[in-house]
Length: 397
Ligand SMILES: [Zn+2]
Image (cartoon, rainbow, N blue to C red; front, side, top):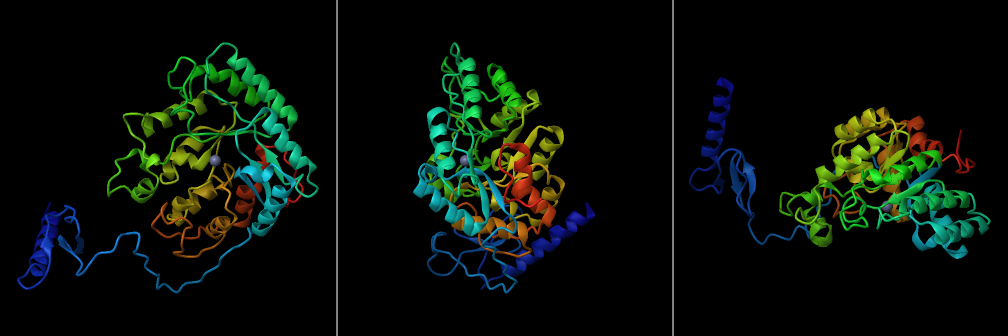
């Protein structure tokens, strides 16, 4: 009590000193935000800039920091991209050759095509890869599940039959199951298909029997479920892509979908699940750590959440050390020039460097400096463990 009133006196006197006649400044009550158009310049005192204020899009400060820079074009060890979306590059010999050149330039040894395809499309992709003289051992394909209409007569049996056929054709896992599952996908009766719907249990059991890890993307970044206002750290992204904002009136909320996902993982302990995008908990590693502690059948993949890893280098370092056997490298969108940002975050101690998409994150990244044995696990060894059919040539022991 004594200490608190002392702080209050200090605050008051600073405000009073600053708000003297002849000095600019708008006092505010302790804890209040500044009025619009102003920023905090002294404790509990706000001020507006002199002159026209640029849009946040035009404010591009150049860092004055002089610090070691260790850009990494190529990964230190060969990499399996578990979250591959090379799109049409895997459909033809020319496309595959171009994909190979890109993969070589960044030291990605194996591309896992995670396009959730099955049947003829899966077979034709596998055939194109197998026919390519230098890519035949550099790409593998995951099969997919089509959930729309789940619950109609014979749907479960047909889905399992398709999985079996796709494994026979060479599929090495399942995924990426997209975010529609659990949010917008409906059952045959028109209701929302929850990810933990028990009608799906025989399918997850089939995945366990067929030794297929299930790569699943559930929901969206938590900020997309929050009000689209100026306190939302994804305000710019939601303004650039208004479709990303999620209305609580139309969709279930983040907590609800995540609770359903966790109950799916718990209810199917024999099935291996890989939660894409670190389960959208990279900004809350404590939560993800608890899940990994509780669910031995759970792995995670870090595609498109580098902005959250690189902004908490000490916590992320400790997390990657602790869960080094449970994390897989994945990139998501295939943009070869973006991979080196990942290598730099994982492999260096660099401070305060740019991320590749300023609209995702207006902050800078830091290296988390992982030791070689951990790099090897997240780059390839964990993925090889989950997909025994993937060729091991090209990876160090
Ligand atoms: Zn994806």
